[in-house]
Length: 256
Ligand code: UDP
Image: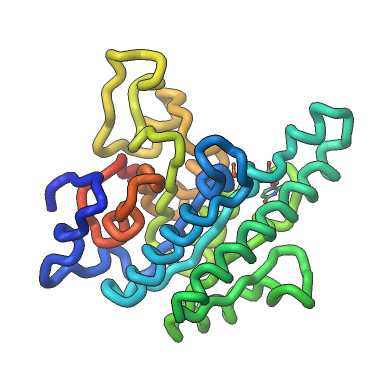
């Protein structure tokens, strides 16, 4: 299908549009949920749009969707170390941030009538189920969107690595990594700083590592390489792109 990047979904809605991968992990960075001015940590319109796209993808493409949300709009490990907190404590705070985002996303998706479950890597039984791999898979098989909160439950990691690990555990063939900064894939250099930067349509894991391309942390890339999980890096802030990514419309950069 042709490359696309606007709100017109005729490319996705074309008769016969179907999921490129039967089960995916959608990784959304925390900052993608914030308003562009960062005035609101979670922007109502952004949240609703993402929720609608996820619900629509379930309906139209019958794709099984697990979501890993980051927490960078609320707290990062470095937010605490910068003010003298120890890293593990600060990372625990970051994981709580991812849980806040996960609950917001759950609420927004369920308002649309799409069933979801949140599972947390750190037990918070009053809020959500604990992460149990076989139960997560069962939810997916039943058509529920599963939101995996609190990363891996361990400090010193990122939600990119959590997305890669969970993809392997639940048998997802791809991690769809939504970027939010208006950069629609992987470039040879930062396109905001270097006008000669060119976008790659496809790269190998080794290319990403050897060229030092800043896409995901190295742990996540090498994990995906070892476990043959494809990574699609795309701009999640463009309306329709979640659906496009899942339908296999050409966009972003595919790493495999
Ligand atoms: N974090 C962690 N372990 C994990 C996942 C996340 O300690 O498995 C913490 C870490 O402090 C990180 C923060 O949670 O900075 C927010 O996650 P991340 O930076 O991945 O969010 P994103 O950049 O995607 O918004």
